[in-house]
Image (tube, rainbow, N blue to C red; front, side, top):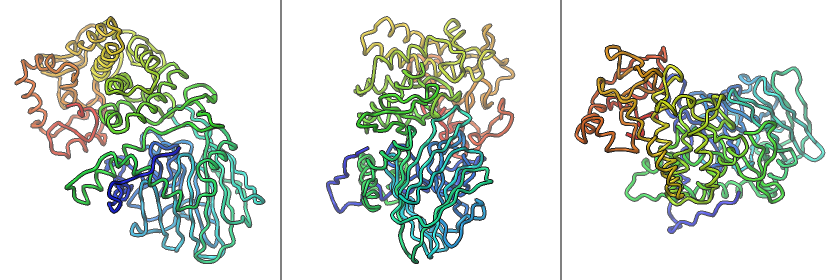
Length: 590
């Protein structure tokens, strides 16, 4: 994919990409999040992530800042500790001899010898061996500086992941594929094709491993640089080869690196700041870099035609068009998508059309694209994302098909829990999602009302006045779940009774009828009707008092239906803002 070159008004100014520190947030863990990030070298919304691995057998926590050795470098597609990575393939340079075992092959390094930018990753190991990576959309240029005469590249997959590696020593090519199905549904096979700047002098396909493992050898002199150009595809090895020719061809490592930097500067440069300190610029542009990593393109240029192996249809048939993946809309509809519509509206339309293509292939817009349908998180928030983008002037997506997908979410029951809104066989008639039918029902209800409001707004803009009135009326059903006796939204059963008695109700109790939160976090989740919400609290001053109470409430929590402490509980209250837990999304509307 071609991106416009960065053309700053002041050529002497520091480009925004130079402020990106891709290591920020990588000192994390399952018990407490400090970002849950990894140092991804990529282009904006790119097909692949390229990253070091401190644990080469993990598909969750692949890079831990506190560790002192790197076990591999990987092609990654969903490096989420909660979702599990997929379609991965690993490379590890070695000198002197080959070591297959991951722990034993770990190469010690210092962060002082590590550079992690959006467009470039580099590390020099204590042994003197250096690895550098510069990304393209579907590929990357790698540059290895070897300290000795016997130099190797080891290729493998994580344990239990099938695949095939073919080594063509005559033409200097390594190619093959890797399979990977996450717990959230099957993913297309990933194919790869790699070429090298130096002749392969020896090679071996290693047997007896739980992984697919091979290695190649180069005869080098100390300090010699060897370049590997590699590209991937979800369609075929031949397409991976084509992707390599399209994006890298005969380009030098430095040229690929510069083009990747220009791609980042073109989007990071959408925001310019005055009066900020250098540290503040690092915070801003590093965070923007994270925002512009996802969702990821999953389409390829096949003979001049955009094409993709559909993750939404059985057998992953190749379709014409563009598709984007890796997004949980509940996590992003209040934050990144509104940002995209403001800063990159044309790209936003292209990405939204990619998710509409998922609807055309599989019958539903996914709630969490992983890359297909994942039964996780709450609400069909693509409804409000489509509407928000259209009302802000984004038009370059299939609006009629998007609107059809919204109506299906709001009016159709699916027996597949990964598709559509849960509880639709009852909620349409009751006006709320019943807790004795669907867990976390208050969250499903409140998000559903907001989604209905999005449908109403788009319907009105499209001249569908009857639809607009119907869904606007439905968006006001949030009043059905407000309990004046306790002053909160709460779970209601199908027979109209509350989940708990007033005496048993606890506003700080997590889970049960709430998703990743408690009654405080959902106490004002009706932004579509501010005055009506205020009336539930006896007027504007009452609503103001409720919000004040949210910030002043004790910072304690009842683990409730979670049965134990989850990381969101501890993190939410460390900001010291009462029950306002800004570290997680349920309060971002407040």
